[in-house]
Length: 183
Ligand code: GAR
Image (tube, rainbow, N blue to C red; front, side, top):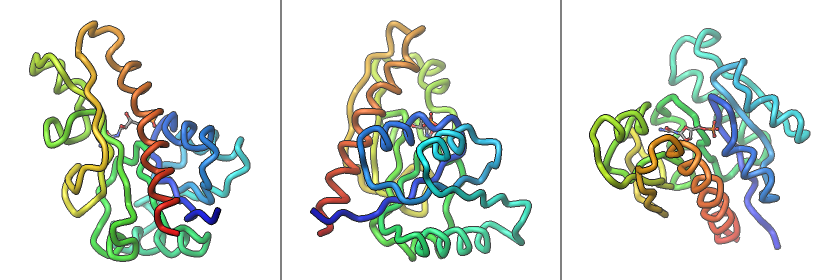
């Protein structure tokens, strides 16, 4: 069965990228805003094409995003997955992939958006948090929710690993449906 090719954007460790690779999804290219992201080591080990689009090398975010979008298109990407990508995407990038950009976020959005949701959850003292997979729009962790799963906050010392375990199952499930549904 024909499937859409996936481009994955990463900034960090890349455990969610690894989950997509391990699920056998058709990842064709991996892009990062940081050349030191360990996710790039994982991508190269899997034989994937990688590139870094650092802000230092471009006039501004818009120009960087346009160059990155063109590179993804050149690699046949139709579906973009943000797997721990920590920069907001600008409008020109969003317009190149309408309704085809997915993000995973470690909270039950719209609660606790932003860069430190797990710390924010612990500070707030709530009982339940979780994982959200959603389509990306121009906002910070906004856009239509595709899937959510709750995770109890206690025991706190294992919260991060329990959230990651849910992400690593939920993100590939949703991405698989999306890349099959398009054809
Ligand atoms: C993941 O927990 C992901 O949900 C989060 O960054 C982590 C990346 O881990 N993303 C965000 O907070 C986006 N707002 P990874 O690099 O090991 O996949």
